[in-house]
Image (cartoon, rainbow, N blue to C red; front, top):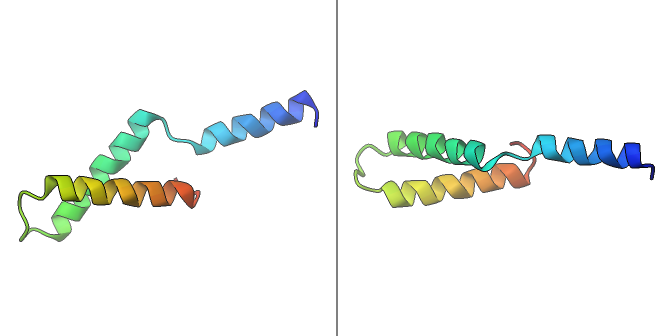
Length: 65
């Protein structure tokens, strides 16, 4: 493979990855919506965050983020 092709492929891979800041923001938003769906369960911040982390990780592994 030529260096140009490899560089383009690596650039494409970088475009698919989220920065740590973007990933954190996605988790924050997902945790918020999880909490909104379960208003009867206040004080579940840690559980909501962990569920959101799993959700974002799954979306990232599926190539949807």
